[in-house]
Image 1 (cartoon, rainbow, N blue to C red):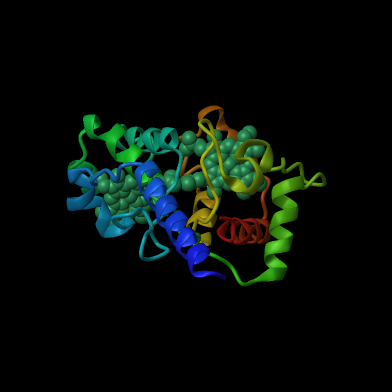
Image 2 (spheres, helix red, strand yellow):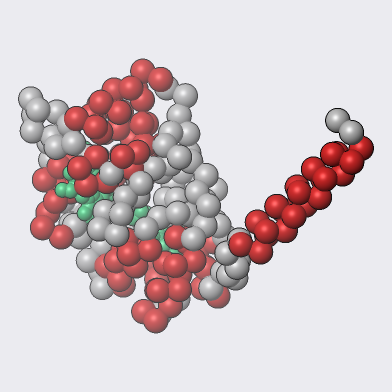
Length: 203
Ligand code: HEC
Ligand code: HEC
């Protein structure tokens, strides 16, 4: 490559970098309550440090908002979340939901290829023999979710399985129209483990 061409290329690269920086969305500072409370378990960027706490980064803002309203109204109950909820005002919810939704998710990942393939089949096709509907019909391809259905991609399998069990037992009952309770009621423990493994590996 000639010196002139190399120089031109370098100029083009730095121009591109400048354009990308200018186009990048402004990084909003975490809301106060996230810094003082939520980050201890969910991480400052919504990627929880341990699998006991759900990933919030990249979750749909509408879903985060609904869950926080449900927790405050005790339609959804969890002992670990209770003290943090004392510090959460209803007015903080939209900013907290928007903040965590805007963070970059780091998928939990999976190395169990066999379980993952079994989970993908259930996710995409359901189980006609037992009447499990295809998850993809609501949670969309790869579990990305939309404004009505939560994102499941990248979530810790431990957490996802715990929620499916909670829906199945009725311990969690904040799904409108019992939609998830009806699905979970038909899931076997093996299917829960497989589908959670598949979801953990999704970007
Ligand atoms: C002591 C640890 C802890 C703290 C602090 C905490 N959480 Fe949680 N959070 C949890 C646990 C555990 C769950 C799972 C609850 C369950 O199993 O139903 C959860 C669940 C959630 C969920 C539901 C996620 C989903 O996918 O449905 C949201 C949203 C959430 N927390 C937001 C917050 C916010 C906002 C704060 C700060 C005000 C906060 N949490 C503080 C432990 C914590
Ligand atoms: C008819 C639509 C529908 C179908 C089909 C469906 N879901 Fe859901 N799912 C929902 C809704 C709605 C929620 C959120 C409920 C709420 O508001 O708390 C949910 C929540 C969940 C959650 C909890 C998410 C969290 O962050 O706490 C998991 C896990 C889940 N679904 C897994 C599945 C799996 C696996 C399948 C397929 C076997 C499936 N869902 C099929 C509608 C559906």
